[in-house]
Image (cartoon, rainbow, N blue to C red; front, side):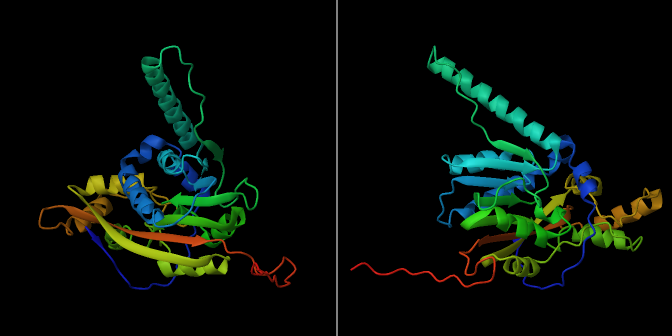
Length: 313
C-alpha cells in the first residue's frame, strides 16, 4: 500500500551516535532481513533516474552497504567508473566476496563456450571504507552521487550535503532516498505507552531537506515522498525487522533492557493495529530527492563571474 502525505512538520534534532550506527551495521547477516525494502526503493530511484538525461563518467554510491546498487549502477552506465563508500568494513568485505563470486561464474561461463579463453580481468567496483560526510575524494571529481536509504543515519545531514556538493562536478547530479518522520510511527506510539524515552529516530522532514540542499549550494532540488506500508503476522517479526533496519542509535536512548511487562505492553499496543486480514502494519515514509551542483556565479573571493557567449557570425 502506498499513499502520499503533504503535511509539514518541524525539523527535530537527532543526537545520533555515529559509532553506534557503525556497530549496528557491522554484521551483514543482522540486517539481511531488511534488504527487501532497499531493493524496492532502489528500483523506484532508478525509475526517477531514467527521467534525467545524464551520462556520468564517475559515480559514487554513498553508504553502499552490501553493494547491490553498485551492480545496478554499473549495468545502467557500463562505461562509468563506480565507487562504493561505506563505513562498515564487514559490508565492504561482503561486496568483494560477491564480486569475486560473480567474476568466477563469468570465467566458468567463458571457458565453457569459448575454450582456451583466459579469465577476464576483475573490473568490478572501487571500494572505500569511509564516513560519507568526510569523503577521501578530490573536489569536482564525481559526476553523479547516489545514496539509497543511508542519509538518515547521520546526525548532521546539512554537513553531508555540503561534502557531497564538494566532490560533485559542475552540473553533477545528486540522487538520494531516506526515511521521513512517519517511519516506524506505530513503534513510536507503542513505546510512548510505557515511557517518554526516544525509541525511534525523529527523522527529518522532506521540506527541511529541500532547504538544506539550497543552503549548501545545490540548485533546483526536486523532493518527493511516498508512504510504504509493510504488514506482519506478529509483533515479534515486526520488531525484529525494525532492529534489522538499524535499531535505535540515539545517544540519549534508554540503555537498559525492557522488562517483561513493558515488552508485553509494547506488543499489545502493536497488535491493536491489526487490519482486517489480521496483519500488523509498519509504516515507512520514503523521501526522494535530486539536485544539481550549479555553475558558480562568484569566485572564492566573492567577485561575480560573468560569462560571454558571443554568437557566431
